[in-house]
Length: 318
Ligand SMILES: C[S@@+](CC[C@H](N)C(=O)[O-])C[C@H]1O[C@@H](n2cnc3c(N)ncnc32)[C@H](O)[C@@H]1O
Image 1 (cartoon, rainbow, N blue to C red):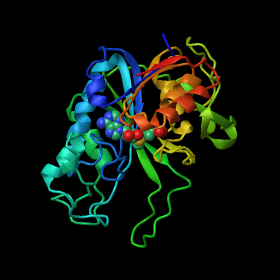
Image 2 (spheres, rainbow, N blue to C red; image 1 turned 180 degrees about the horizontal axis):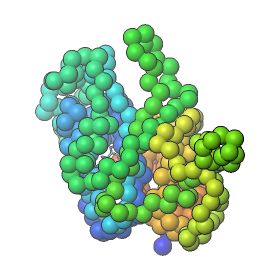
Image 3 (tube, helix red, strand yellow; image 1 turned 30 degrees about the vertical axis):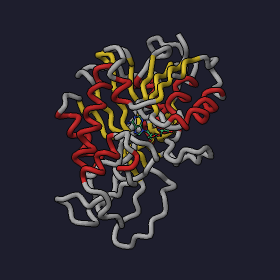
């Protein structure tokens, strides 16, 4: 079996053909609602309302849930946006849906624009990540944790009536109430074990996993010093000089892959983009199944996978 399998096409369509109970975990970042036009018919994120966006994501993640092993987890990165942020009007609903769902008639397609959702006045935070999280919970997922991705280098904003946005979410969801979660693999480092001096237990800083190497075999781990990973992760956004513009930093997803799958396991990313999940999975001795709608990212993905260090990178790209 190859170290990766990459499919180019619509994730719902491709996932519906994947066998049940296959993947250890899914680590992914779908296009955010109304934020970016990836210039491809059928792309997610261009739905005219948050409700349609959420419905579409729920359908895709229903297939993800089916394809996860019973002890599988989903690590879902999502960011928020504001209603009516400079863009209103645009296509009628029929036109927008045709665009979002990929009509084959290009004459009917125009670039969509984000509308102010009906029940929200402009300037409102839409709350997309939590809308999605609750909808997934309603659809049978166990919502286990919200993780705050704190960005020490956020995008500058010219706002003076609210704080500058410096975080996104990573939701941890599981298929079953009990699931695979290797807490030891992502413990954070102790900086002081002087419990007497501090009057508390061992102290640690957020940072790299402690006491486990990237090559460690998947075997029961001895209890180690270090503390359980916290729910706020400080990770700078990483510049990436390829042609893709919404790449998540490898250090944001490495803990998800290490805690969510054993060495030799298989990680799914239904919105592969530039291939970050595949690259980190292979670097950490896992296999990856990725789906990306835009075939133009193929050279980008292949270049990143060819640079992977730990495993030889033979795989299948369809
Ligand atoms: C936020 S980006 C993912 C970036 C990725 N995490 C990385 O680090 O490069 C979302 C990706 O989803 C893809 N996409 C959009 N709609 C899709 C669909 N229906 N099926 C599969 N991929 C889709 C977009 O082309 C885009 O590359």
